[in-house]
Each structure stands twice: as structure tokens, then as C-alpha cells.
Image (tube, rainbow, N blue to C red; front, side, top):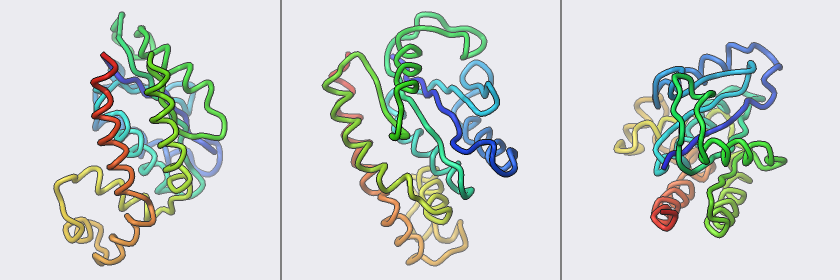
Length: 200
């Protein structure tokens, strides 16, 4: 079982491309090697393969990374399933995980993040939760995005340590995480991980 992220950058042609491109490359490099595990193609589209249990948090990690720069956001289709062919380039690999990811991405309209597996009941539950948290996440400011990105990257650090890393006060980090719905994201992620075992 694999999780495939298919995504693109919203407003990618506005401003300086390097503003989001370098951030995207840096974040994708944390999760694997190019081009077997991730690739940027067609200018502003990308694919990434990750373990299924990491999918939700990685998607929000990428979102927080891109939203640190004003006006940019990301659309992500998450696909779960088997990988039947592993090529040297992820964009040439195949299997139901890739098909589910591509179809999920193509069906994204106003929602910027959704998931698709071979279990519609599972998908409906998780997608409902995602649609609710996205009401908050789609409006993250760069300060909130930075706090959430750093917290995801340092899951074992307390707010005090996160504040020190970002050279901010603990109260401002606490407020940013609260405004961004960070606790709710962690709860959704935990629920998602417990439900994964029902898929296979």
C-alpha cells in the first residue's frame, strides 16, 4: 500500500516563481529522492510517494510551507492503493494509488485537499473532516503557516522550543497554532491513521 500526492500550486504564475519553487523542492526533499520518489513537472505540478500513515500530515506540511508566501496555496489529491509498477521516475510509475491520486486531483474544485482509496465510506468520512479543517487552513497567514510548518517538522518540541526556533514569543506561537487549527489537524491525522487498518 502506497500513498501518492498529486498537487499543483495555486497562483503559481503570480510574482516570482522562485518564491514557491525553492520552498516546494526543500519540502519534497524531506520525503524522498528525485525523481523516483518525487518530481515537479509541467512547471507547477508535482507528485510524491509516501507511506500511507504519513499522508495527511505531509499534505498539511506542504500546504504550510507554500502558504508562508502570500498569495500562494496548493491543491492536493491524495491517492491510496497498491503500486504495480515502480519506474525510475515517479511520473512513469503506475498502480491504483496513482490512478486514485490522479482522479482525486482532477475532481478537486473548491476543496484544496481530498483523499481517494477503494473504500468510499472511508473517503467520505475523511473528506468531510478535511473540508471542515480547510475552512481554517485555506486562510492561514504566513505567520500561522510558519508556526504549523515548524511544529510538524519538530513533533517532539514544546511550544517554548518552537518559539525559540522562530525567534518569537511563546504566546504568539500558541496563538498562531490555535488560529491555524493545529490541534484539530493532529486529531484528524490520528483518526485517519486508526481507520487505515480497515482498508487492507
